[in-house]
Image (cartoon, rainbow, N blue to C red; front, side, top):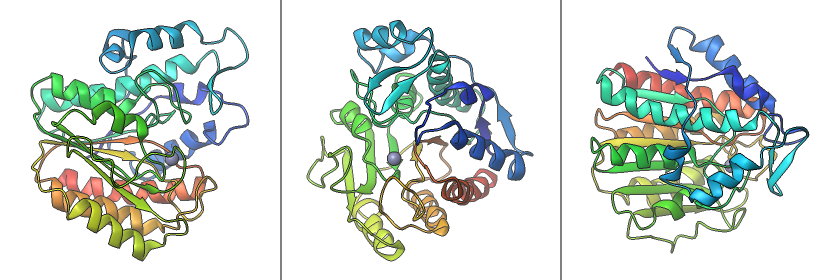
Length: 306
Ligand SMILES: [Zn+2]
């Protein structure tokens, strides 16, 4: 049984003509209700400001809260647009990501979570909105999990086609949180070189433009699966589906089955019956998003039943 966090509030985060569109969450909702409706579908609650202060600078958080438009749109960076309802979407996305941790702590049978939300968060820096995202959902959740003292060593696997600069920067001096990312490189946001190692807890797997399945599997195995030997007690996915060959925002050519492969490979190596929280990042072609996510969820479903 997968536990999903989802709310229709995400349909109200209006970005206008934008790749990070309402269509994306409609597609994800359709998939969940078509194929996973017998799973546990939970509604998140709004995260508090105080929780977000643990990861993001207070001034920055206050700035976001104070600059949500009363009408029309605000831009927090050239790519990151807010409408009057956007703050709710931001806070539910953080809320679900953090409540997954609470649910795991309160009941050991809660092993697998998928946070179906928008906007994505992995580009959001401590003090800066970037790449469609304002608050770094996965970072706030992982930080919360570590503060709970129930988890000592956490791994974040980010297979979104873009490097998660925000997540890397937030944790690059934290030896208890490992961050591993495969991403098109050189490409937006410019970070993610293999030489960026933090305190030995950062693992980057750059992918060349036009990378196909075979090369992706070879490089992901070499730079992530075979490189990391630590044991973890909590695993996150920053699950983006924009490395799909149909995706308009990048030029990596993964097939639907590669999202099955990468999820399974990661679980086989790192998840010995530990809890898994997967949070949605990018994915901008609706067919690529639907099929890629379905493949990811099939593996999570099997794992949740083990
Ligand atoms: Zn992306």
